[in-house]
Length: 299
Image (cartoon, rainbow, N blue to C red; front, side, top):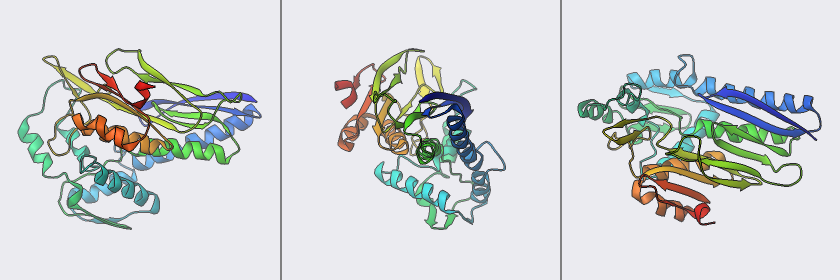
């Protein structure tokens, strides 16, 4: 079997696909097809592209109105609803609008008035979703699939590789990972869990023959003010960053489940570790005081 690795950038992060195939040509063809699908999803759901379908949705949301969506978008919305319910409203795809207040590149805190004005335009309960119609009852709203679509792309890419006869490999989009199958000798893939406070250091490594791993944390985009770290995971009810857990990693059969579970745990603050235990998924957490726990930590 030939080993092939494709490195590329997508969804704002370094990515790679590693495959074992009969020939380099086959591996490259399969990897190229997977990357093309990832790029399709980025073009379709990017909040940075004015020509994306998400931008079309948000132009309607800005005015307060309705739009018909296709089956794939409907599936993402249905999953977002499930996450909203599971998190008691903390996972809310209408909360991305808070980035208007939280400009991490400016290095300063937003004023409370700005946050309060935005909170009036946040809340999934203000959206009516009955497939295929998506309706916004309050003008000035937005939706953002940032907490779902990258992990969904990972799962799709891995499934595409398997459908093309690849049984050994891994898809990695910026640390959101899905195993296509173990290495050719049957050994697992070793995946590092990033340390949230030490650059280029690992908290631990996880060995996976199958399944997926995703992580959330306060270290990707943040500002430090008077010794206090303010991360990019924002509570949609208060408009302020979470401040209990520094990082969470979850293992599941699907990357989209692992990703949303890690984000919900972050949003649940001090209730996060107990909630993760109740899920029964392998996990690892690290809080802002330096304590660590979870079933992967205990292993």
